[in-house]
Length: 137
Length: 137
DNA sequence: TGTTGACATAGAGCAAACTCTAGACGATAG
DNA sequence: CTATCGTCTAGAGTTTGCTCTATGTCAACA
Image (cartoon, rainbow over all chains, first blue to last red; front, side, top):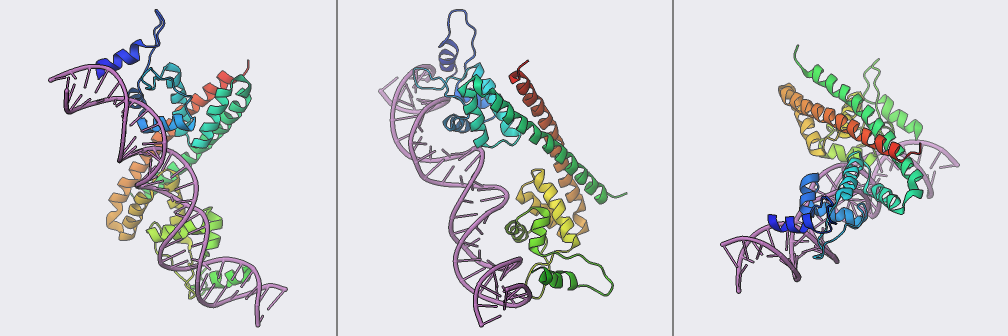
């Protein structure tokens, strides 16, 4: 399959001289740690933009998709729900006039993360204290 | 109900001169932010020790239970699963010979929280960067 | 030419952690 | 006295976020 993928994902959609990176869904899964299932699910839910297809109907992820995905993982891993990510994605797809709303969402997320961090630090002291209380000496 | 609760939860189980604090499940829910359902669920699962009852069969939480619960929330909010919390609880109920295992569990949790914090800080910079990129000027 | 392997879709299934419901009981307020 | 309130148990239901299954296509390798 290796050569197959190379043919399909490295040579298609390229203009002359253009150096572009294109990934199969399997490759993306490998790179991001998300499962193939999850990637398809994210696209279906509209958390990813509609991914381009080659003439076999297979998804072809490009650099922009990868960046989108990276930020998606950032939002996900800071506790944003699927619903909110969907909202953010829809706003992004609507173009520049939604920038203020996107900033508002990101500010909110930033606040949340900051309070998460401070909460976690409090909890960290509680755990440390407990360990010390348990420890001999 | 206020007077009722006072009678049941402030005067029972007290030795002469002892100042003890006792809470109904509703009061505990209010104080901890957990729902009554969740509290009962935690007891059923063995995440809380068996809670004492009054002669009507109602749960009477004391100071120790509240502290247990507080630490339980700490573990929960740092991402420990119900299963692990159950394990920790069982170890605690088994007495002093399980202290080393409990320390091991808490050390593991501590590591996790520390790496969560550092991950979150990384994500925080990504979000900030994105906000800046969006922002005019 | 037949098997293998990555991909496709639609939709069912699953685990975790609650969350709620039904039906009952005793206490208290009006 | 009766309606309401807070509690009880057992067990069903819900939500979120995946995760998997069935079925099928196409291309490459032996």
